[in-house]
Length: 383
Image (tube, rainbow, N blue to C red; front, side, top):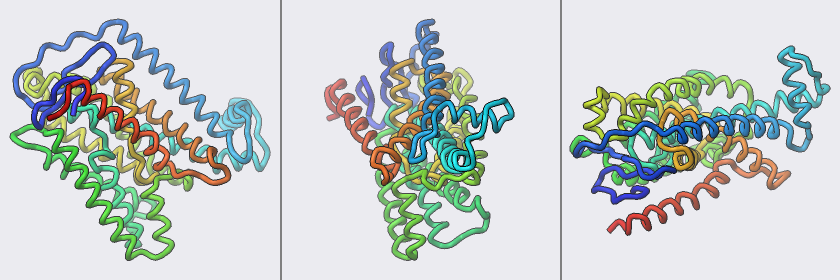
């Protein structure tokens, strides 16, 4: 599947960008043209978009921290934060401080971490596999990581304390992504069509395993497992934030270090090797980073799909394919999307709360369908 050119059998495609098509190769068949330097207008657009995303994220976080059954104005949110940091400001009283710091802010920070992890993981997936339709949830990584978390819950395993669920989610997510990657390789290259079809099969198998665990679980465990299936941040606490923070922070710090190599990989495997990139080592390293980020997100929020698909693709169309912007920009965009989505999930149907994973799927699925239709129309069909 590609965005604007005919997909070679089992190969990569062409990514859609604002300034026209770019090479999006996964195989090493033939040299690609040299990559031109990003024009100043594209670099300026990327810088402007980064600043806009950062400002919008800050505004959304302040708004989300104040909106709810107990209303807190944005000014009071900022004043209380400054007061806690000994920078002036004032407290909000016992009830206001408790609502803000024990209920709202842990949830906002967790949404920020989970969204940034999923957005960054999606950008890396699309760069590694050379196709803008690649996403951790689409190829089964999210559901695979959920299997490990659900197994830990259903079997009552607590060997690592608060880290148990995260550890099992990471191990299961890592095993899943390595399996999908191995099955998608043929003749020394990654077959994108096989990648997506393998992801469908892995999702089905993981769903069956989750169903099996539900069958043997008691009522309390079934409630927890349902949380993983639907996705939610309703149980956010500071200990959960601290549990996921090391994994998310490590992945978010490591990912931008590979931006230049991802740009070279976009030229094709053979040109990238000629320019000094160890393609297989690069892919393995980034697959591990994707597993780390996705498992960290799933461990605390359950299965939340389409964030890693929608955000990087829109940013690529808006500011070009350069990964020096795309990787950190997708982290910012993913954080913004999930903070806003979580705010909508808990306010749209008050006093009830919509499952976050259901809400992102309701929005993301039509976008994915539109992307498939647009791709097919632009390249004249796939037959």
